[in-house]
Length: 136
Image (tube, rainbow, N blue to C red; front, top):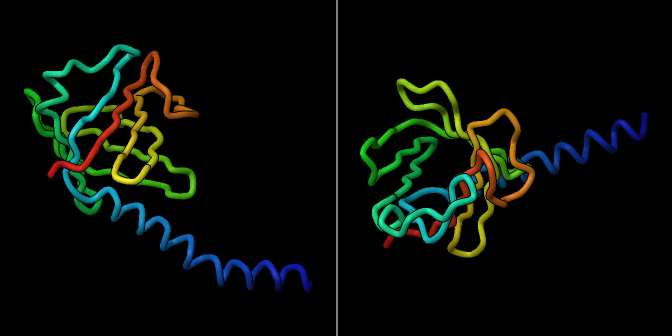
């Protein structure tokens, strides 16, 4: 019984802290990001594409700018596991899922539309890795 009380007390104290971590990470996403580096299917993203591509995060809204199609959709994160899911835009059926990491002013994403979530931020088959920096 005492152990249960201690666990409940710890959860009451840690719960708000864990929730704040998710809100803090969500705030870190906010804004427009440009592609500093990246790869798709293990091949480098061409410089021409990196120059024009922009990813915008606003609340839970996600938009891609700079391509022939500029989809707008939503995204969710799990700060505890540093995972992200970008919902499929209208007309698509597969979401993008993956991992993220913030390092100072850089955001790294490793995304896939496959069934298996990437275990690391490394590129390869069926994966896209984007190293992003804030667009000034």
